[in-house]
Length: 627
Image (cartoon, rainbow, N blue to C red; front, side, top):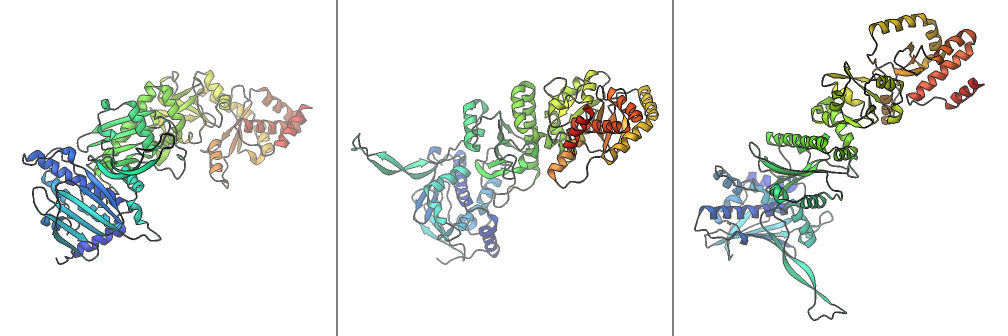
């Protein structure tokens, strides 16, 4: 029979598919198996609507046959006649599956994997020639389609005993860059079926090599022989497709370990389904421990995306937001619009709806854990708190609603982790601010004079010890109409108008003293002033700008060349004996007064956990004043 040419547009599309559209050669097997599954779906549906079609669903199988330089995928589906071969294989992008689905679109439970007819042509990435032998159900004649993907195809009459289709791929010769022969190796095929087609609803069978003891082999010196046996390679029924009541906890955990290579049990399993505008099923896990590479560039966030049991994407980032990147799991939906290669999703409304629903579901489950199993939640929080906090501050707080109620901070008053909601609920009468102090060690922070003062008044203080903590108030701005206040740098708002007036009068009275201390310390401080919020402490440091000392430390860690130090304000407690001693010395012994000023400044630096410029000089100064 004369060779027919592909249409011009089909020729260009074929070139594009072989060289550009598919990013991995191994995808070809997924596409061929999906087409075989489609063909058997069509036959099974026909049997439901035509009593004359007598088939046993248990007989519907996909068989993979390995040969020297050849790989064959056979199905027992509805098959094709000559006209359908011409239509579906002769014109690239003509979709038999899509046409079938459109014809049956008003009928429920139509489940077609291949929404594009082009998947078949992925075979030409690995094959120098493809032969399709097919016999349509209910017809007597079989037909053979052959092409090398270059200069057209032929269709001839042939023999096939039963209805169905064989796709025979003659593999390309190995090159220095590509080893096509691996696609006939048992291990490789097992891996590809497990990865991409494990949940195809029909058995995928292949003869595999096994070993057994010879029948006449002696017990003391057993001999073994190899043999071939037909084995089903896929598990067929995905766990997420089963009803929750039919899945045990052990099965959930076993699936998690095998699928995501985590030896720790997940803290939470989220098994759900949704129907409506967009239908999908999902099986999500909240891990108990962070993966070893979680905080590295190598870690890939995202959920595995399936369509009718066929894996479309290994890590679909668009399905899970960055602040919940620790979630592992799978999503299975047939409502997503896939591109021509099915390897990438089109950004559409359906995908957005699924992602939004998953985000709400994850937040709901975490909230339930927080409220009903605090110990388990704190275990989770130990592993992933930083991720939630970064979620609250990322994109200028755009995602704060999803994470702010899940955050925990150490309470100076309670001596434990609490939520912002719990803090606000326990606020003292008349308290208008959420107080916090940033630092590296919660025990040291609890001893700050400002913290002690607030605790004495019955106010709680959150101790921020994580480097990202201080960014949280800046992003949230307020929480339940309560503003945040950095107790170590901002006005605590505790003084009455009378107290403020008295402190102003005291500052005027001691103006010469404050000027003396400022001149003594020089450029080390921007300002020296009095404060009534130091409790029993003689001195403290405050920042003169919006940046705190902890923020300065963080910026230096990120960039060692950072050269914008926070301007320091030395606050003095006019009622403390050490400050009064410095005032007296200013009159009787000026040098000693200067030493006192330097000493108090260094002590304030230490309390603020800031490094001394010259620790040796400080030590000598202490020894000098002890004489």
